[in-house]
Length: 261
Length: 261
DNA sequence: CTACGTTTTAGGTGTGACCAATGGACCAAG
DNA sequence: CTTGGTCCATTGGTCACACCTAAAACGTAG
Image (cartoon, rainbow over all chains, first blue to last red; front, side, top):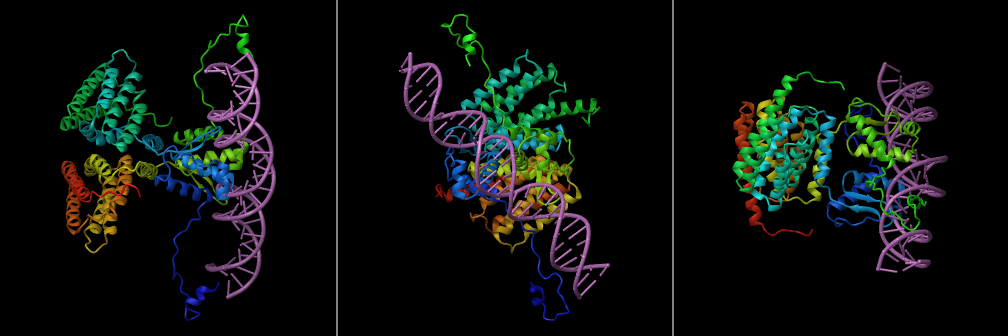
């Protein structure tokens, strides 16, 4: 177009890089639609449970092809913003992403990055004490019921290792729920689940560990019941830390790692 | 098909529910493909950056339609497991979900659930002190450089409010990075970003707040530099808590909420 | 009023065609 | 030898259309 020549007053002295452009992106049609719908959903324009127009209707309204519309809806579905049902009076129903959504993405990262069990425990050590403190502050009777139930399940001697670990996860998640903080609950759910799968097949949990764990849990549950935030924080700190120590000890003893498969 | 009649020896006495099936789910074809590929990626079967076969090639291999194949790839893309490039030698390149992935899903939840600023701060209060402790333990010189850079930006008096808040976020994220814990980094990134957007347009940040903040940051940075884990934990606890108090005060003073729009 | 088949409305899948972007090979002008 | 232009092959993006499948709603026989 010759506009570079126009920028220079002397034809021989070409200015080389007088202007810089940021690498620009041409959005895909499906992304445009998805972005628009996402924005509206997050803005609260539709109540939860509202049905978006059927695909064929969206095709008419947006003048896009059904393929494009479907791709946009699929994006929103994966992001947890809609739930798609088939059949008559089915369609895309607005939903708001909750803990499961966060938990699943955290799980993906943990598995993909092959995050070591030590790092997982370190993270749990970082956030669970504070979680217990909040639980002591905000717990309701329903929360207490869940905790008590998990305590019973853990104290059951005859359960299998898997049962024990499952109950263990349930208890930790119950504490998180009792904190009434959705973010923390999401984090803890994902963490506990990952720790669970990492801890299974590592038989370092013997009867002694189970006994100590059950006792610690009950002690913390008591603090939460008594709304003793400081005690809950302290005991949870100690409990999680001891667990870390136990795992690290075994890690060192069983230092024959299985890196490949 | 009349097989219920065949099960009964007398035609009139139909046995009603002789066999019970668990409600089974018919998975969608695209999900099957996506699940398979996801599993392989997470298992580390492909190195990061590896190109999956082109769509048309996958169509041949899987005997599925291109529509289905594309949907599967789109799912993986949204989950952060592949990055799709157009053009020659383009395609789906294997990727492993990192902090951005977690951060974006957390953002969705925060926006969608309309989580209050108080809850965000509460969450930050729960995890940042521990984060600072880890940073003091594991920080490298590169981490210190980032922290120092952020400290300078914050101390700059002449910046706009937005600049200040931006630098504030950078510093908090830098602390998280220094902890060398990818999970915590992801959490803090998402939290800080959300707090940033919530704090903007709330002019409670005056010169005094900025001065105190800059001072607190420097103090914590010093603790991290000196590998003093306890001091880092303590000072960060105090700093974040004071920030919460400041915000809550303003919240009460400006109790004229804007619920609708 | 219940039971069951039919209809209708939605999403799910398959096909084939064409558009758009990207990278490489090649060529021409300076 | 560098710069820019042209063309081509490859690969994802979009489209239109047809058909299958699932589920809710409806209507009717018993």
